Image (tube, rainbow, N blue to C red):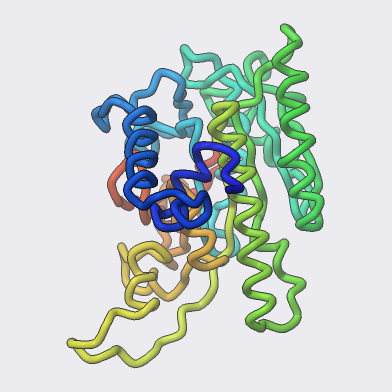
Length: 335
């Protein structure tokens, strides 16, 4: 009947199984029920699943931010940092590439990072600045040589890197006792791959969703199979104001998007939403929104000190922590 494995049987309805295999509907129901009974897993508490011993956590370098994120950056997940230009997305990605290298006694994983760039180049000068300025970092525990860089200017190149290059790279490092295991993959920035779509049509939107789905599957496979953290930088778009529907009308996409597409912890923050739409939002385990507030504060005591720009970080949704927000600044040490 064309059913090759258990998954094919479970995805089929009893009527489809009965019609395809030419068996009685009652027999088809019994087959599916028997398979479900044999494949059923014993129930587990959510706390036990979250605390799976395979998952590891490393620090962001800031204790308050770690607490906000549920203890730090957890492996086995896809994390997204969305925000406008100069909000600090790249800063945080660079910072994590260094802190994942720290030994476990200092909150790291003694791991390595792979920094995937779409259009820009790795900011090695900024990495060296943070490495020399942050009190938790030092050349004895962290090195730029532990950050592998890859350029992926096209969607096809990114798919090749995720499906072929990275699995081979991970296995090569794991077989070398002198190499650190790969624990973090940063993509800077995913939405830039879709800028070349000249005209938005139904066909291009369908094709974009298909590509996003293909990339997402590969990211989830890498995260779960090799227990690494995936950190994806994303852009934002302007939210266009539309008339609100009547109270008795069904809630449309705009009304639903406020719960997953943007932050709303301060006035004006909800005027931007993460790019790539619902197709991508459904794939990430945690969405972090970074924004510039326009507020400035004097943090130094000198007369010539310039006011520091205050930025805002909001957890829109996460599988390991509740929604929350905090202010942050970017210094020579990082975030």
